[in-house]
Image 1 (cartoon, rainbow, N blue to C red):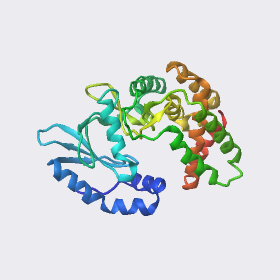
Image 2: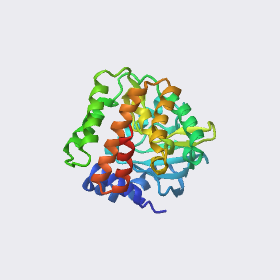
Image 3: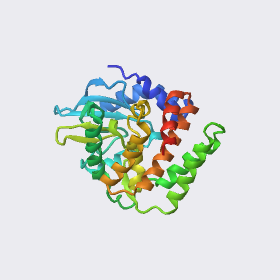
Image 4: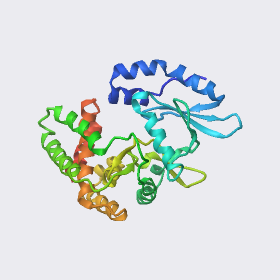
Length: 297
């Protein structure tokens, strides 16, 4: 079968890594996917669409009939670090690798069409909190994961390069919050890095399991900050959105024993960073939603 990249993947890789690097890898993707399938003698059922933003994912069966998911990602998306994090969690709260070797990822199959976004908001946040709590463990010795300070330093540099009077005040507040937070980080745990409702899928051996980590080490408040703004379009559309957004910060912080102000600060930084990046990529509606949410904090 064909392995043409879904359009969501094409757009996301171009935005994140640049059209040149993304285009070169995308041109080779069909052959890379075929090689991965042939190497493991897999039977391919279908490519998941619209799929993810950093890899092509296909539902497959192993030679013994075991269902799995094959994930083919570009080297600049650091699949080795994802593999290392998943191996360290070893199925506790996250999808389990079926094979530790190879340039691609062969994972246990989850229910790809059923994420926490299928649940009512209150239930989804409850299940999300229970899932992410399991992932916050000490990193392995000699790990190669970057720190929250390192990742956000690169993001901060990109934010400073954006010269837009309309966002300058929010950017300044977000950068100030980030500087204060990294100056006195309280812990160094292994983090998912991109945890949100859509990154938690229904499973068979456990009700919900996390997928698609962009792992790093640092404090829990950073990891929780992306979850705070889930379903941001619903929050912005609601008359009580600002109040509900601030209440969500406090509720999630309290439920996971995270400092409220640290969570508020990281939520501000991550929302402004994503919002300015969306505007730069021409996704104005997404950017404006995120920046309006950030202004409530």
